[in-house]
Amino acid sequence: MSNFTDYTEHIIYHPKHVNLMWNISHPELVDKEEYETYDGIDDLKDKIEYYLRNPS
Image (cartoon, rainbow, N blue to C red; front, side, top):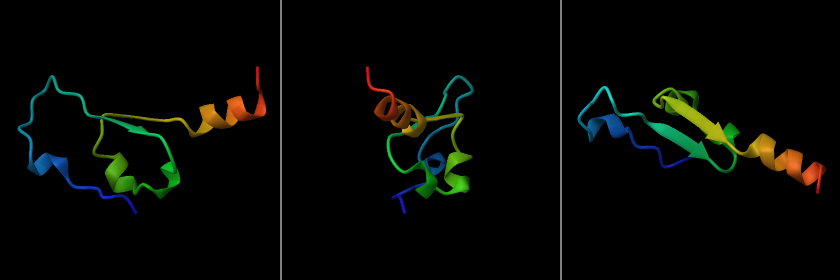
C-alpha cells in the first residue's frame, strides 16, 4: 500500500549508517519485506492508543 522504493539501489553502503523507519500511521499496511530493510522501526500506534484511553 505504501510507495516503497528499495533505497538500497540508490545509496552506497556504509557500516556506520543506520536506517530507521518511523511509521506514524497504519503499521499493519507495511509489508514485512519493507520492515526488514530497516535497522530499527518505531510506530506510534500503541502510544497513541494508550494516551487516547488514558487522558491526563
